[in-house]
Amino acid sequence: MPSTRSLPKLAEAAKDCRGCDLYKTATQTVFGEGRRDAALVLVGEQPGDAEDKAGEPFVGPAGHVLDDLLEKAKIPRSSVYVTNAVKHFKWTPRGKRRMHSRPLAGEIVACSPWLSAELAAVRADVVVCLGSTAAQSLFGGTFRLMASFGEVLTHEDRQVIVTYHPSAILRMPTHEAREEARGQLVRDLARAWKLAGGK
Ligand code: SF4
Image (cartoon, rainbow, N blue to C red):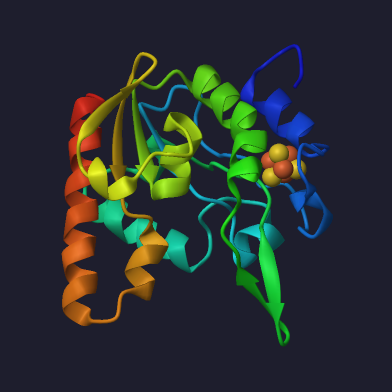
């Protein structure tokens, strides 16, 4: 961790992180992106295949879903800081494809100082945890998403809303389920934006 904890310094330092083994099989560290004065922070799970190659968070299929949800919630993406609980892509091979693999509790804990440093640097009052990995990074490994789904929680001096990860929508089996989850996510994002003072 660098002594100066500005976002650019943190991002630079995270490139050389060896806090767990995930750096060994990933292309690069994918640090958060956005403005230091962002009113809202969105935290996902980990970079996916596209993000690992691009070096940017939420630019793959889940990122396209997120862009659409933000637009529906009337939140400019340029006004939010987006990041992940885990900064390296964890995957397993299936033929020529690299399939997403869920990070272990120890990997979430190992990466949590980066997320804490980002939250301290951005100083947003409101955080949205997109999925259980993000919530477990903040609230610990015993956190269960469905028990606190949609509630406004408190973490240190921030308000936190826990909701679906956009990629969960892509995995839902029916159109109805996908639309229901999409609506829920838009409502949760809009509520977070309002809590953050967004107009
Ligand atoms: S996943 Fe996080 S803790 Fe592990 S090597 Fe990457 S940046 Fe470091």
